[in-house]
Length: 253
Image (cartoon, rainbow, N blue to C red; front, side, top):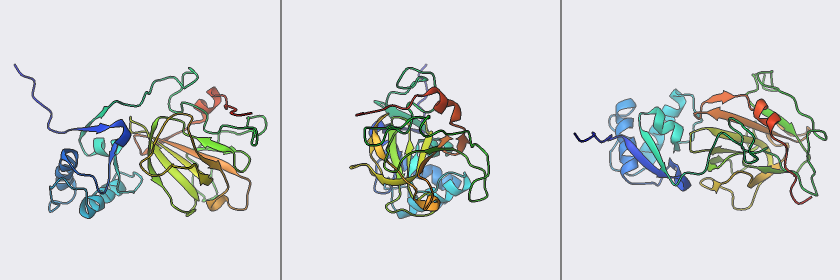
C-alpha cells in the first residue's frame, strides 16, 4: 500500500528558510491556499508573494501574537498548518559551539576583542526576567552591559528575517534572527550592524552581526545588549541559564 503524500509540505533551503514578498513558486501557492481558509478567501492563488499575500500574513501574525513583518518564517508556516522541511539545514544540536549543553544559545552573544575586552567580571549581569522595565512592562529577555562598540555575534545558525534600517522605536538599532526550528532571537540597542548583514543574510554561530550600543530607549544611558529568545517565534523564554553555561569568547585579544 502506497503511503499518501502530504500535500501541505513546503521545502525550503536553509539559506532561505522563509517566504517573503517577491518570492514565487509552489511553496507560496500552498501558503496562499492556507491564507484563503484562515483569513482572506478572495486572495489570489497564483504562486506570487505580492502585496495581498504580504498583508494577509501580517494580519495573521497579529492574530498569533508574532512579530508583524510580513515575512512567513518557519514558525508562521507551521502555525498556519504547513509542514516545513529544510534542505541542507544548518547544524543545530542540544550542545553549544563549545560542547556545553544549552537549550537555545549556541555561544555567548557578546565577543570581546583587544579594543573591547569583555567578561562577566568586567560587566556583571543578573537575571532580569519578568522584572519591570523602562516601559513599565515585564522584561522578557536578558540585558548584557558592555562597552560601546563591543562585537555582538549570532548565538545560533540562522537567517536574519528583520532588521531596522535606522535607529527607531524603543529597540533602536535591532535585528531578528530565526533558526531552522522556528526559534527567533532579538538583538536590540545596537550601535550598528556588521558589514554585509541585512534582512535575508544567512549567519552562523559566532559570526559578528553588530556592535553594542545604547540606541532606542537606552539613549543617554550605559550601553548594553538586549537579547530575547522566542520559542516558535512567539513564546519568550528566559535565556539566563544558557548565558550562565557559556563563557564569553575573547577574539583577537
